[in-house]
Length: 312
Image (cartoon, rainbow, N blue to C red):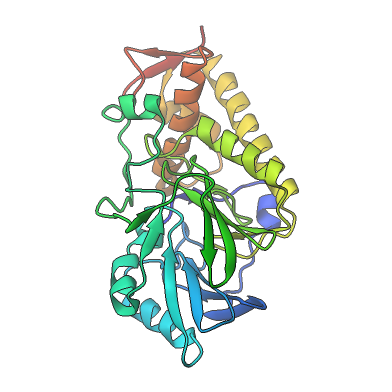
């Protein structure tokens, strides 16, 4: 299950391709994508599982949801006499990590990730965790066999892979750098902006992770959902501008007077159907938390889902 609000800008619409691709796609020599059968308005076509390498041992990124049909498709995609030797997980949302345990059992491959679902939260998000709600779709039972701190360089059968701690969408989110490209999980996608749901999501951390990827200057991004992003810098800068625009809209709304979370959400997301407002509210809350911490807003009686927000 995913948590993304599609961009309503011209760029966001251009990046939304309506034709679902084949389940198995060879994206480049040594790189296959297997599409999980979990499409939805929030997961687009479904979760992308990637298999890297050309030898007898392969590396897998994001096993996806715990679906027997997807697991069978992944194993069937492997050429004869090859095996999965490592399972890398970008983050502990059920649509990315829930299939890890069964696939590990089937292949005897270890699971590598930043840490458990709660790992990587900022100190202020950890302190606010009881007041912010959230937790949608979190794989709370997820525990990797091997933890990957930021900057870990893995020597794999597919070549070197660097683990990059990139919180924002989720505290334990990793991106993986390989052959000039980055597997960006749910941090950066071409078809949608990533929903940031506190306390696992963190707007300040999202900006910092975007800055990290900009410094890295990857040639291409392979996201957790949707097609490859061929112009990473332009897409990342667009998403940062999109966040800044949301902040300006929030300030404009609160200039009319104090509002609670849902009132701000309705004022900002004027073109959304009611069914999408709860997801949008999580994004709004991420901005409200960040802006309150920056003293650009006041929260009464304290920061949380029941607070009333106002400008100083």
